[in-house]
Amino acid sequence: MMTGKSSLQNHFQHAEQTCFPARARSFCAALMKRRLVILGGLFAAIAVALVGLILFASGGPHVSGAMRQDAYVWQRAWTQPVRDAVSAYATNFSELVLLRGEITWSGSKPELIRVSLDKSLLADLKRPVGLALRVGTYPGPFTTNDAAIQFICDTAAGFVADARSNGIVLAELQLDFDCASSKLDGYRAWLEPVQRRVAPVPVTITALPNWLRKPAFAKLAALATNYVLQVHSAERPKSFDAEYSLCEPQAARRAIERAGKIGVPFRVALPTYGYVMAFKPSGEFISLAAEGPRPNWPTNAIIRNVDSDAGEILGLIRDWTANRPAAMRGVIWYRLPISTDKHNWDWRTLNAVRAGRDL
Image: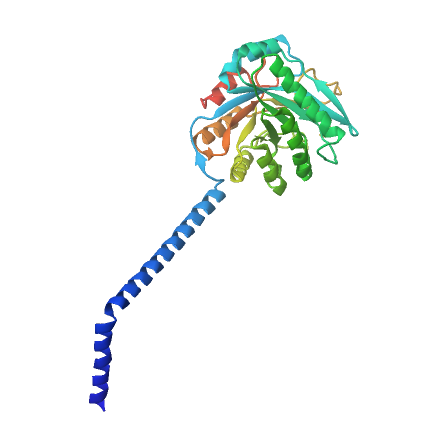
């Protein structure tokens, strides 16, 4: 029985070797090759996913090198010192952004405060400028065709037409809307009509760090196609002795990384200004002043000066020059030094900080 079984096995082995070897080897090779292709593609997909995850965690792709730098001119009265500063320093920036007007609301009724610019000076500069339209807090409702948005559109279009007719090179219209973070969808409803009215001039929105976590902001930013992220603020201090910073560096760094993940191009607004704060003897906050004459505070008020920390801002400039999210296109300084502005850096300080030089 053993001899017969061995003969049968030999027979089948011989048949397999003589009848199927080429076909079997070809099939196995093709199968192996297909498996390798599938595995290779799988590993490549995993690698891409890991890279994407790393980039997302780090704020998206990063770049280095010199940044674009712009500056705001936010004075409501164009005095001779304002004109002198614009003439002297405009060439140091890619663009100056000028406050052109502010809309406030009395209920749902809009009121416009215009800023009279020196249009002949701006035309003679032959350099691009932006116009900023400030819009105060509005509770809603937000529609695309009611009286409120119509007034905003008419105002914006009027500013753009006036600039063009006076030979001013217009780079953008900035819409600085004091919008609650819960109403960003409403802001988006307003933005599109403004864009249509001033086209082809781009509309830039200003944004706050707490907006970045809102799902509605990504949609708003995508519609805007660019924005200015304000990492400075003047929050009400808790007490006279409480720590206070106009721009907390670590919070600013976190904000720009978060903005980098969104991927829409943005600039970062950095502060150069300071405030004078008044408190009651009990430590209770009264108010603050940033420009113009000091308010009529009580004679026993305790005064505290709060200034932008040039050393901390210098650190941010150096860090971002070396490494920043690719979506971060530059910084915009708030605000341009004016010789009579005592609550702001002088030109020597701003010029050193913007260049990354020691103070």
